[in-house]
Image 1: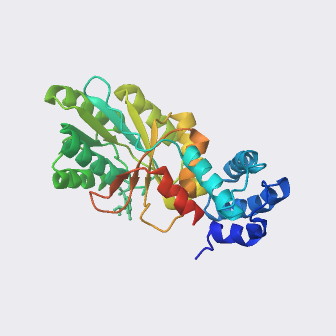
Image 2 (image 1 turned 90 degrees about the vertical axis):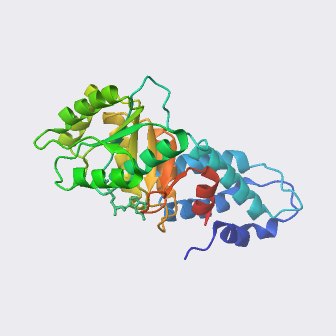
Image 3 (image 1 turned 180 degrees about the horizontal axis):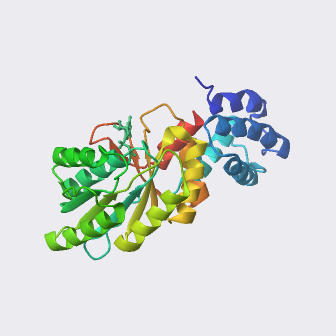
Length: 296
Ligand code: GDP
C-alpha cells in the first residue's frame, strides 16, 4: 500500500554513494520524505516537527560510510530516533504498592477497556499468581457489568457482585473494600467510557480516583483512531493523570503513528498493546517493531 521510506530515500539519495558526509541539502531532501511518511503513518504534526528537527541535527554532517547507501543511513538514523522517542521496551504494570493495588482503566467507549481489563487480569493471575478482583463501574451501558462478569468467568478471575442501582463511585469504594476483606492483591476498575470526552466523564474519573487511590491509571486507546487518540491522551493526562497507555487493535492495519504521538505528547510509557479480540491478545510493547511499522 505504501512505498517504503527506504525506497523513497533511496531514489533521492542514491547518487551520494561514497561522498564524505551528508550535507544540509541532502538531509533536507530526505526529511521531506520522512515527514511525508510520518504524516501518512498518522503521526501528529507537532510530533513530526520536533522529530524531524532531531533527525536533522543528527544527520547533517554524519559521515557516509562507503559500504552503505546514504538513503539507508538516513533510514537508520530515523529508525533509531523513532525507537528512542517511543520509549523503553516492556515497561511492566507497576504493582509495587501495598495490597490491594488498584489499577484504574480509563478511555472512550469501544476502545477496548473491558476486554483489556480481562486480558490484564488473566495475565497477572497466570504469570504472577496474583489474586485479582475486577469491577465494572459502567452503570450507563446496561450490559457492561454483565460483559465483565462473563469475561471474568472465562479467564477465571473474580468480579465484584453486581448491585443494581449503585453508582460508579460507590462501586469503586465497594470494590476496594471487598478486595481488602477478600485478600486480593489487585483490583481492576473498568470505568465507563463515552463516545467522546466531556466534562461529566472527567469529573466522574476524578471522583473515582479520589475514593480508590489507584496506583496505575491506564488509558486504553484504539490505535486506529490516530489523531483522536492523541487528543484523548492529552486530555485524560491533563485532567485525570495517567501512568501509562495501552494501545488496542494493533492487529489492525494502522501504521503505528498514534503510538509515537501519544507517547511523545504525554511522555507516559506504552505498557501493553492489544493484538486481537481473544483473551491472550495482549503483548508487551516493542518500540523497534513499531518503528519498523511506521517506516513501512
Ligand atoms: P470498551 O467499551 O472500551 O469496554 O470496549 P470493549 O472491551 O467492549 O471492546 C470493544 C470491541 O473491541 C470488542 O468487540 C472487542 O473484542 C474489541 N477489541 C478490544 N481490543 C481489541 C484488540 O486489541 N484487537 C481487536 N481486533 N479487537 C479488540
